[in-house]
Image (cartoon, rainbow, N blue to C red):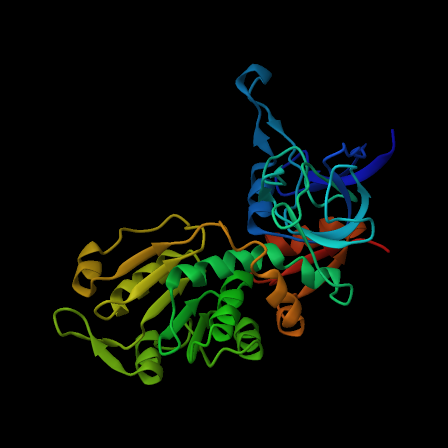
Length: 347
């Protein structure tokens, strides 16, 4: 049987290891994809912190390695006889939570591998074809941009809404792009890292706030005008807040600033937080909207990602060869060291 290289969590926490494993053999309903680029997600980093995942009790509860990666783009190299609408040579992005089963995130297959088996391959459900002119690294943004798109869809933002996105990582910046493409007239991005704020302006944000140095309330009032909560207390005129940071300070800042009828869309994985000011939420009738994954958006985003590829390409801060994946994860493990890292595979 042919062999391939695949990236797993290492034998100790915060390390990775490239292992040689059997190359998957596709069945009549499957497709085999040669991976050409795969993004690194915060979920991958979480598995690194654990050193893997706990095995079943009958295995003694030991930590077992995890195959990493769920943001792939690649080229089809084998197609099962029963697969329709797909051919060898097609460039594809893959749904890592689709009908073919989970990819990465503790599953049997990870996309940070030379090859990926897409079981029960179905175009439009488990994978989608994209044009040859789109670089593989940009195409690998499809999955995280679907996460951002779902958050924006959940917000039901309208053109006249005034919006602020807290957190200028890939999801926050992706949300800002989708908001502008949706026609929202004024989008602010807030973060504590100047380089991220510069990138926010480059991808189309109308204004930025350095929340480590600036008065968020004053700046939002300056940008969005003044409104009030249900008690008539002055509040910025911001209509929709996005939490793409997951820090307690963001949640509390939103509650403290929300006008009557404002919305908060929570898309970040929340870190351990302090008590929530429920009274503040009541005084503003703040609507909390949770956004998880991409129930319908995974391939909804693909045509627009293709159309606006130059804009989305700005989100990538580092491109690292697969052979140097350990270096890529060193950056990913260091807060503020990188924004969006894409692992690339040789031609």
